[in-house]
Length: 215
Image 1 (spheres, rainbow, N blue to C red):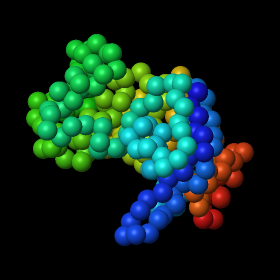
Image 2 (cartoon, helix red, strand yellow):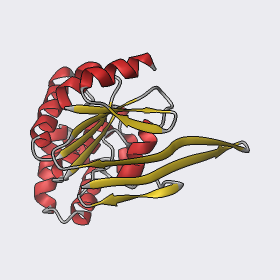
Image 3 (cartoon, one colour):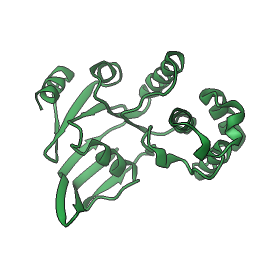
Image 4 (tube, helix red, strand yellow):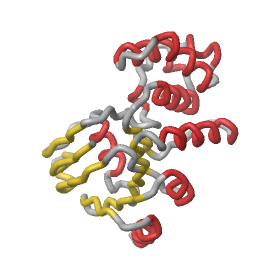
């Protein structure tokens, strides 16, 4: 289970305080597939980063009784000075995965070829997204976080990514941030809207999408 208890997030900019999250309380269980919807700037990405542990809340706590991925599409998942292959080796050791098997999987899935030997700072945005996505899939997480980006590259590669996520959705929790109704309907069985710092869950996807569009 993944539980958020009284999550608040406040940013200080030029002497002003911006309340992004105001007491978010919720639970996600194994097998949940939940879309998080909201306007640009509502705090969706901030919420996902807090769930992953990449960012700390101002107040409240996240209780993780399951392993949680970094947000797919999050550039902080890799170290830019290391090669793609070295990033994979580092992640494999951190999560206790067989190094060579993990490296072979990421090389094959990302289709980066010889670029795996190059520093990540030389990668295009699409290449970095492919590496991060493949690294996430190489680790058998209990919960996958997908922030806006489902895949980068041509339609064939995008379809591979969609199929891989659908396969993992059957045994893992999936939290998806997206503005695209088709993606929400493909991957999620329920949804919540984030507005004015509050996360509201809805009975069905149609109700959630209607509420989102009304915002």
